[in-house]
Amino acid sequence: MVKCSRKSFSLSNLWVSSHDKLSDFYLSSWQRGESPVPMLAVRLILAAVATGILIWSLASALNPYWLVYLTNWGLLLVTMLTLSGLLVSCITICTTVSDGAELPWFISMYWFIYNIAISIAIMITALYWILLFDPEQREEEAPADFWLDVATHGVNSCIAVVELLASRTPVRLLHMYQPLGVGLWYAAFSGVYYAAGGTDSLGNPFIYEVLDWRQGTRAGAVVAASAACLIILYLVIWGTAFCRDKLSLSIIRTTSHTLPMTPQDAHQIV
View (tube, rainbow, N blue to C red):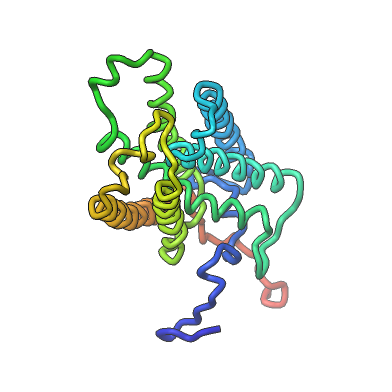
């Protein structure tokens, strides 16, 4: 245990192994009571949509290059987020969980994926529509391909945002390194992939043209700018979760402090 600024700080706070209330991971911010059913219903829908998009993507473009694209990394992360959240809700309905010093493994797994998937999904959506989307190429695409692009670069973020807003899952600033680490990991992967002679599905010596490592300076600048944007995005997500909790506590999860009347002590009756 490390003491810092009059407050106790534990290295476990850097990981996803401890939190005061287990109920924050299976209750909705917008419900009264302690039933895990409302969040279960939300997560069931989200998991069905995410899994459907994943199957659609695999069926449409299953080839050896599928896993080299950041879009598909994000799609896998969002699907894992919804399925792990669904697992948390199902287990808490079937068994009784109680607060303790350490979080159960299934909650830690969900929280870790949650921290990564939401930021990465929104970042992928922003990068695609700002840097990669080509309206002229869109005219040459089949309608099914366009709608798959919308699903993998738009609906993915909607799923992540719904999970963020509907749940009570906490967002800690200390966990910023988790999505940032995945983003930098992908950048490193793309560089190693290029150095090893890897190509995209069309035979180009890069995965994304904007991240062409033949132009190292530009690619490095893109990575640095993306990392800065990811940090800002995580701060926005943290602020959104903070506002979600404050609004929920003030409007929905209010607690009455009015005490019931107690009978008068018999010894005081004259």
